[in-house]
Length: 476
Image (tube, rainbow, N blue to C red; front, side, top):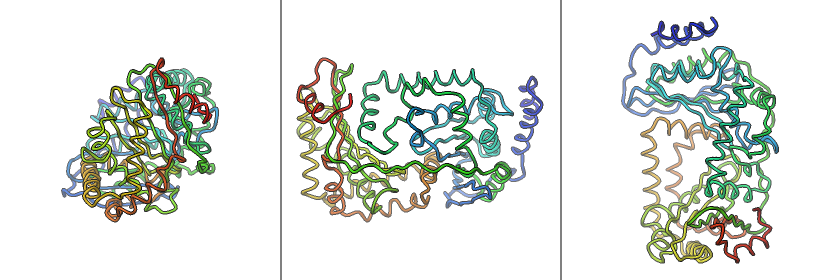
């Protein structure tokens, strides 16, 4: 196996060959010579290296696989006006070579050993992962330690990746009416929070982004004391800890900049936007400013809001499906969304499409009628139980994936929240009462906290919606 690795790199510099030998040597370390016994999912072990690098390990011995994720506390919400999208472009550049590997060699190495890899950028984080047979874990750590501090950014590769990201933006947003509407929803809903900018960046910012600025972004935020390693799979926590020390322990910590201010101004009234685009079926998007686990005055509100989302839209027996889709038949589809794992305030969203012959204002009125009924009449015990069962089922099925388990731990870690919340989540949901749901519906699902986006066909924009948009100073 080692000879095959070297053979594929004969034309490379000797230092690259040496690094591959180092990785291959780690692959055959005694710590992974024997299979781990057991079939259960273990508890999370937490370690912090002297340089501030955090390590979370969760054993799952049901299959001989492992997922390794490195999460950086840096995402689109850290970006400044004029430089949006730099975090996502840098994510692409992390695959384009280091002092030891040329462009594409890291990905080829992962593929050669039967693994898969990718990366992701969000508002609060950027993450990189590999998933493969458990004995390959040392390769993951060697790769991530190398590109954490020794990334090479070639000017030609940079321009290529900028074009790739701009094409990605074109496909997902510019040429997608739903994507455009969703982007405008966030841009209008957040006045002072950095969540107003799209994760992928605005097109003009991407076009003008420089290699020099991207290098500075990397040098500023990519360091061991701004990262967390999450490993889930058929592993021993103490052995993973020793591997982390071996690969990351000598990396130097940096003095990090202050985090952005995530404070969102208290809304003073609803905002309405009409977007005319090439669509045949109009869409209605509502976003209500709501707290996250970091901004809530009482974290119990976030549990109640999660339950509210499932009571309204949690299967065929939920209120929206029962009353708006099958009952009044004003909605062809409808769904809610609420994710409280964030540094700043978030949106409790309702997305819906009307049935043929139903106007958007009729659909909106029907939705608010259901919300008002929730405020006046709390959910029944049966409704609460159905919502809880669905939430529990989601958690149980999520445990079937080592990636999902790691993802939850990582998302909590990057917002400096205790990973133990993941274990306590269901317990808190079980304590939510009908009165709690009624209370948060009254407090947060209010028109004065709402941003509403109407997506309509280009030649059929309703006059009422246009007038309302002008009155509200809508962004178009």
